[in-house]
Image (cartoon, one colour):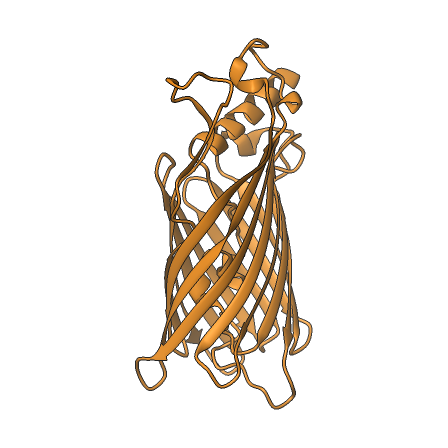
Length: 311
């Protein structure tokens, strides 16, 4: 069993460092600013979102992600500002992203808006190779840990929405950064970790089924060089502006159950549970993946959110 766990972790880590995947979220529609800076300020009020994701629960060294984001529109302007902090752990690797977001929104119709966004920040990478059970103890690439390796990040995004539809396109980091093994000679091109450009597309539509029920189908597509195309399809129902129930399917990867509750006008909580549809999901030591999130919004009693709370 220990050898199986080690192989799985090495496989996951190899995937992470050779074709680096940004953290994935099942509840992406509640916190799109993490991947799209153009969303900053688009809820019309100051919004704070915290999220925790534990993936492949029961497997030692499995991915864990925490995010904290804040964004707000500036009064009497078309400008939105935001700040996001993401910490992502998998096996021996620990990555932290800190980014500031800027958006500018222009009206393009009676009830439609188009926003352009800019994201800038830093990425900090730590890798502790002593946490690995290495097959080759003499591998020179795994002798020296990576400690607080800094690299800049710059991203762009666009976000279009009406009262019942939204479409977003973004690349949260346009830099392709390779972390080389400093022990290698100058002629070597071997690198331990690499960040590749991730492209995101999101879309959703809200249907009013009746006065009490809204239905929102939505999708997220992620493209990154060297990794399979990721497609997330979800369907959510909102009952009486309070309770959200839904399901999602991550193409060739997982199925997800979603639930959310609007505790008050200012606070919402949500939970998601993923079950793998791959061979990994059939193993006894994998209890699936889960997410918890909370959103808190700051506004006065006379403020109103321009876009529906459903997105």
